[in-house]
Length: 406
Image (cartoon, rainbow, N blue to C red):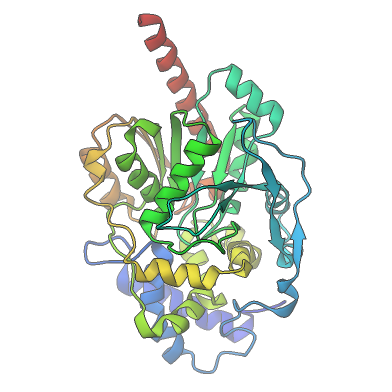
């Protein structure tokens, strides 16, 4: 499907530059929203509806599911998690739109998806709830366990999926790092028919169940990108015993709340899923736009929108009020690796990084990533993986030293 060509593409690029020029970065103290995309929803709802009333039919709300995408494909890779012997993994059904994605790394990562059933408190679900994730191979998992590597769990950003880490995954594995890429409840590809709540509290309970029931409750290294970093902070503040170290990648922690859509919810969700908004957010996310802000990247970022229940889950989350993270940062004492793209145009590092350095109670290992926007894991995955691997080696060395001192 060809979209966003000719004059329409030029119009959208103009609008993108207008929004960025007028509002600057999306991290100012007066901003509010559940991540860059949620804030863009607030900014662009009137703009998209009023500035471009005559968008071509295939462009306006092009994110709406197409009939052929209702079919489902099943991942086939024989990938297992060796974390516990008591959980049974199942294959994950992926939207047929996966066939339209060109990037080999995305298709490879998608085939590795598995799910595990979890028990959540009755206030959040009426029965077992699946957690979709991409885990390590059996061999790599065994090697990591023998080497004493703590489980590494990474969380994607707002309204995304673990495919966000598609380029980081092979780089980490080449460095011998076993990683679990976890789909946050209500986003990604988990089955959610039994879920009654997608609020921050429910997302926290879902991650806790994965940690306790699948990873066996072993202290882990928890990380995330953008709002995923904020969700990692939220979890570490609630369960400090579960998180021995943090990895924050251009993390959102100082923008509180999410836009409550109310009676405009249905329209707002359509805008959130639309190709124009996703294309614009894609443009703002990268330093090297020509290379990375492609139509294929938009298709990858929209794939999870085809999952059953996405609209209801997204509306429920937004109307819950979203995360209040800024009071939690000063409660975190876990050593933290902080990675930040030097050219991040969504969360300005000159504003965000000093606050992390002053408010986090544990040590902060800061690394600026040059020639990089909001997504080091996508734009500079080799460098990001190198820094994460070194951080984990340091963690293992510290734990061996502590064990010997006893």
